[in-house]
Length: 549
Image 1 (cartoon, rainbow, N blue to C red):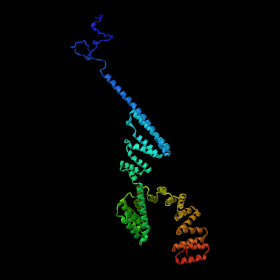
Image 2: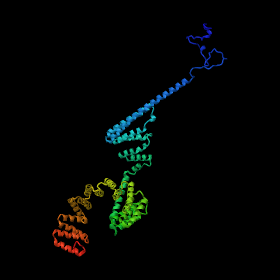
Image 3: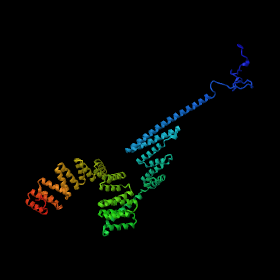
């Protein structure tokens, strides 16, 4: 009823602390403990779904913790990268100092780089990020430190540093640095330990060419090679010296030397001696004998046969004429054995050049240069071909390249001068011919070319001096003799012109021109009686000549 005071049975019993007693606590099914057991259980309801709120909070907490941890790791890595960058900067300064040969400064900076690198490692260990340690940086720092120790002649410290690197299994291929350790022991003249470490390094990589060369280049092997080279040189020199004296002719004497060598401990020199014999026969002008010697090698192993075929090709080229076909056959054989032989390609180009096939010659020379960029014969002949084809710019390029390779080469300078002369650049041509003349002052052809240019320029004084010097070195040049005679006639010294024309008439006694010019010089000089006698003799020998009448 409304307004009635509640019964004692309708109130929850109070505890001594003023709270609700256990009798009034609801059960998990939403009923009081005083409810009857026969009533069905009713689930307890709420505004929010039971259990979901508490799980979501756990997920959010876990994600927040992971994000915080990731952020912390990133900041650690960022700091590590900054510290490593400072290590790299110090390494660069060390290397730059070493390049300036400031070795003390380089060593100090290498040590500082080592201290900074150890600080990075220690920081990573403290933060628990050792798995991302930069092993390459550690190796670089140690290797540079060892190098700087060596540059400062601190061999023991360098050895200790290299030992640290070699013993650390985390460094890949660190065993190869045993070569450096071996070099240090070699420098300290502890050869046994040096060999030991070289062999240990070779065991790391049995195909290492450098190690093989080091082991094959010890002092004993060097001495053996020098002795062998001295013996070979002495044998070849002795053969060349005694061959003309021990037999009736040079070839027979050389043959005896070859047979003797074959029966000695230096039998391997017999082949080289035979090839040398062909060269000596060439020097003596015996082309057929040299060809016969080379034909013996024509049937041997490919390398020797290729060289023999190439030399035979060159011999046939020298003989020219009908031998050009044989030269082409030998050239083809040489190229078949070794198509990348630059000398064989040059010979093939020479054959095409002599036949006037400049395009084929150009192709051969270009291929020879692609196989051997240092083949000066191919480059020189390529310049000649370009001149024949009218490609002046490329010809200049070829000869200037040769000029850079063969400094102060007279033939190259003359080719350049001839090209500028054809381009009517006489100043440049004179300069180049003058350079060539300073290198070969007794070359009459260079002096004659200079004289021709000076004469074309109207400088008779310089032309006379150049022609006069050319005549002194080669008095049989008829063009120079004719120019000298004409110069003295123009200069009103006809009696001097007589001497030049007289020499020309001796060289060409059947050429009436010289005798007429000699008689004319006598007449100009006032020796009329001598001139009349000469005219009579000329008319007697050449009665049909109108000028003499």
